[in-house]
Length: 418
Image (tube, rainbow, N blue to C red; front, side):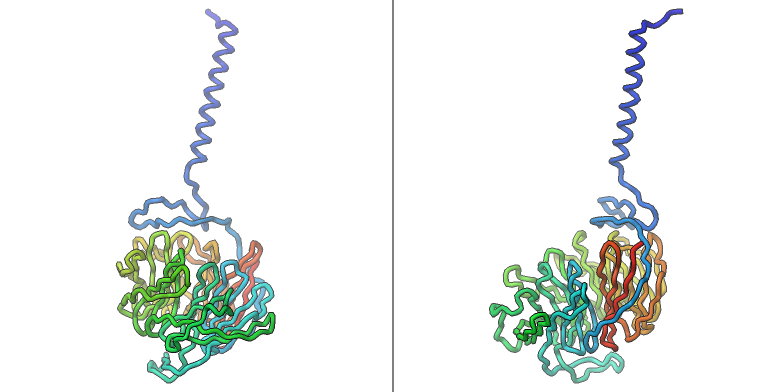
């Protein structure tokens, strides 16, 4: 029997060990570069190139799953007929649009104190009785919804009976440079600053849209606003000048029935409009500002938001239902029943939870948004006809501010993150 030279034997053993180490390193490196898959309740990996039935948009971030535990509810006073609420980007300020109060209220979210009011000087106009379905004498300056732009320096407010929207400059509202003398196309606003006990007034331009403007949305680059016009059955496209910050009507896109909710997808360059008087969602092309197609959905879609997976979530007012929809394939992925007349819906920032105001039921409901279903967690009393809602969050807790139209107050629902 032949024996290996001891030195050659040691060299051979070293080569074998080195080969095993290289193979193990290559395996670890390849695993590190593979797309990660997430457990149920979190985000699955999404391919860059969308295929039929797949969604192209990718999330900016993913947070770990957590439980939302209801803690308490408080109430603060707003004004008559509070229709909607909107937080600024960092959640430090909340703006309440008071339709019957002809005003916008600014609250500091940390202290829940009223800091400023912006009250419109009233002028006569024609309104609409939604129960009798007929025109009635009313006032023009009734705030409905709003949108913040230019790093929260401007809040654009839709005026129910004025046929247009008005910008309010929040940082320079007292500046003399923002004065327009054309009284036929302007609105006077009286400002009360509660911090320094100062009163002032300003004249702001009315940007004409269509009859009964409702929801306002914007593109991510602050170049365009989209406004749904209830009685004109149009979507107004408004260009925002980057220097003067003024709005100019580009065009009105006709739709077949009453439009309301709007969400903009900057990644796919699409805008989705809930056509409340129909059974579909209209899809607009943000490059040409033309209507591309309709996505068939259940009847009477009112509000619409988009989650981190690029899915549309819609409330159906008459049906008492919410749905998750793939905007690429047009397929309704799953639905859930809500209490009567779901109005505004709001997502947590990570998209894991959905908050629904149920107008006729006097409730605010909380759903867990999962991969293939909604799971109802809470159905909380909210008396006074809840309609608008928005969310502010920290690492430890979530607050949902809900405005009640009849009571003229804001309920603040607090949840702990566990």
